[in-house]
Amino acid sequence: MSLAHTYCAATDCSNNSKNCEGTGISFHRFPANQGLRRKWITKCRLGKVNPKASRLCSNHFNNNDFQRDLKNELLGLPLTRKLKPEAIPTIFQSRPLKPPNQARVERSGQRERKQMVAELLASSYEQGMIKNKIWPFSIVNDFV
Ligand SMILES: [Zn+2]
Image (tube, rainbow, N blue to C red; front, side, top):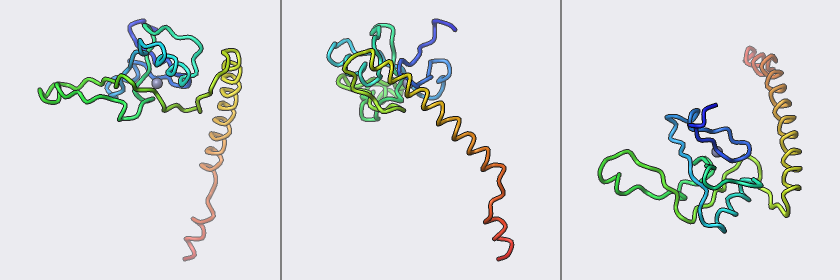
């Protein structure tokens, strides 16, 4: 792993600057404003974050959280994606928690991960079953 790559800090997100190359996904610094940063951290379900080192990818924001790059639009230059100053990430795979303390966050995070793995295994098992199954309606069609 190279330190040159930027990794998304969100739980359950594996985006980094390498595997997102050319996808248009951008990585954004945590806000310098403490109150706003706290909101980000809560949304991301992170206990601690180094605001200078951590990034969150653009998948966690709505389109209207981004500013238009009017200058580059006018000049016909490649657009940069900048968040609005008050933007808060809202899109996460798992429902964000409202943590009263950090220990509880970590415990429920683990439990959720286990449940997710179980659900993933169950769904891929079902998909395997479906693939190998002959559907009754294809037989019915033969009689039409
Ligand atoms: Zn992400």
